[in-house]
Length: 54
Image 1 (cartoon, one colour):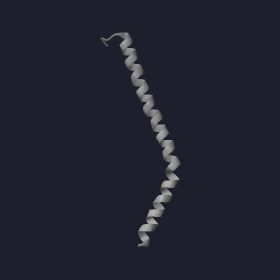
Image 2 (cartoon, helix red, strand yellow):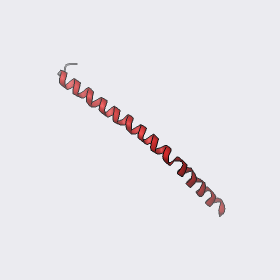
Image 3 (cartoon, one colour):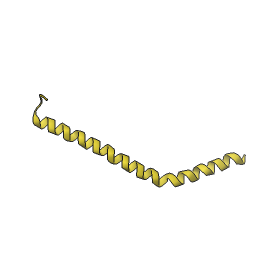
Image 4 (cartoon, helix red, strand yellow):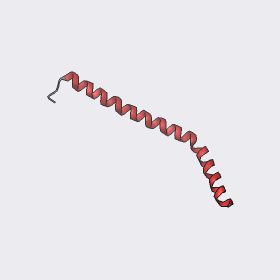
């Protein structure tokens, strides 16, 4: 790779840490999205009822 072994290892670790952070963030967003899904559907139904009332 024509670079020092330490640098290569440090870059690999840095890349892996960024990758894992993105994975964990994706899981966290999915969980939080599921938590608010029911409330979002209720609000949507309320807005639909409001539009038809006029």
